[in-house]
Image 1: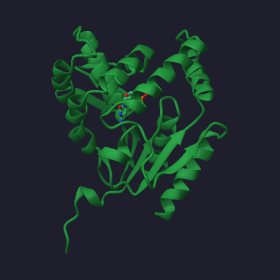
Image 2 (image 1 turned 30 degrees about the vertical axis):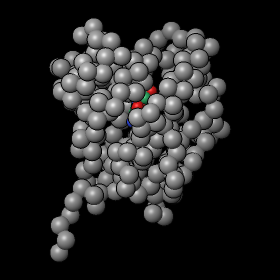
Image 3 (image 1 turned 180 degrees about the vertical axis):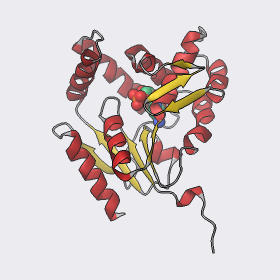
Length: 223
Ligand code: DC
């Protein structure tokens, strides 16, 4: 009998630009299937936050890499604990999204997070969301999805989320920030955001979350 390895555990990779709804959709797909869930963007946000707390610039690859490697983080349901502090809300702030996108351009930072991400591959399966899930981290993912939406609708969604959480927000500033991040994420030389060959493209501009979830579940069933 051939021994089971983590490579036998199915992965659904969901990549796409910022605020495309990946997180919500991926979490619901995972819930539906009883799979684990990896929010890889949270790891880059944590590096952004931890370095901010230490006064380290997002340009300093040499100083950021050990921070990424040694992050002391616990994922507890929907809460994220960094060095014994609940930072779930802090990492969602726009400033941390921007810092995350800046630290993510560095190959040494990306490399330092590879093993940690792959460790989420546990039975019975994993739904992983990010930018390079299908292209780098889980190249053998059984279902690959590239999820997107127009920049305007993404800015509007982000605006509503922030207001609902009691943060102040300006939609024009959000739109510009989102375009800057798209540009940085898609044009960096290390693991840029892109749809890999074989990925199902899903434009959610005029779709509900449920429709997007059902579509992904259908694709996964066929695989
Ligand atoms: O998905 P998110 O908005 O939380 O991600 C924040 C930033 O982290 C994003 O702008 C780019 C970076 N990121 C990445 O480079 N690779 C990933 N797999 C996930 C996120």
